[in-house]
Image (cartoon, rainbow, N blue to C red):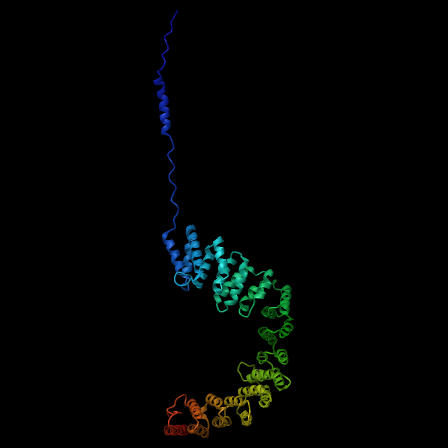
Length: 523
């Protein structure tokens, strides 16, 4: 029987070596700790400095808007710059609203306007941006209100409409603000906004608002015409009616004459004037009859109506004016307007040649010669002024007769007319009245001094005027030397002192006489 050899078993120490080796290797394969997070992005210091520089200089005027544009350029250079620009611009604006905010470091209205324009470019619809824009839209300054309102409009905020409408109205002399405001309003020009836009029309903004208001109406055609007629007839705002009449006139609507005629009964002078102009545009005798009919109604603005009547290119205008002037049943103001604003303007170069022709001119002169003696002082004065503007030397006699009437209340008007007419008869009467009528002396001095070719007056009249320098009346001496100065072109080489010693004055008078004799003898 065989005996097996004993089995040799490894020692515990031998068995543990591979395990220890495995554990050691495993421990060497453990992942290293994660790296630290990257540093947070930082705004470029140069960009930051340029943002602050732009904000500090926003008040400074620059034709190219350098500082506003620099602020916008910085904000658009990256997200960090944009956030910084928004935050700092808002803070700068809010600081300027603080009580007592004035002086360096605070935005003036012009600076806030630029700030709002910049925010419009890069502010987006951030809540704080919208808040500060809404605050700006309530400002009293139209320029600032328009900039903030335009920015809100670009974000579709209809709450900007009142701010923009009021800004366009108030900024009538600021074309840039008006254009900016109107452009912003264009996005809201829809039929549902028509009444709001019509209600905002005024004398100051009517022309600027025409296009955007018309955009609230239907496209060109029967619907637009009907809508405009309704406005021209019934709108409570006279400037809205004026707008509608103008659009209908441009479209040559056949009802525009009736609508313009009806508008003459409105209480608004600007609307009446525009309606009269539309009637005038009908041309010729039709225009004269339409406008003349308005004058014959004794309107409160008779001069305005008469000034349109004289623009009619038809002698019928003169006939109507003469008829009104001769009608004692008309108001004196209306009759005076016919004389002053129609008949007195017939010699002006801008008046139609058909009104300056011989027949209408003689008709006007005949009526004016009668009217200078009218019982109404207002009518008589207006007729004198018109005759002075229209007449010639042959009309001086009628004015001299009027001036010679004792107690006449329109002597100053007759004196002015003689000064404008000129001629020997006028000069003789003016020199005499200057010496004898202290009340009319100032008017005579003005008339004589303003006459053309005064140095060509007759020798005797010049001597009579010089003789007035010897008067015992200081006022007459002062007035006479003033007229003589006008004759000499403002110089007084004879050195006459109205307040000087009598002997010295007389020596000066002798020098004046010598000068006049030499002048009239051709020396």
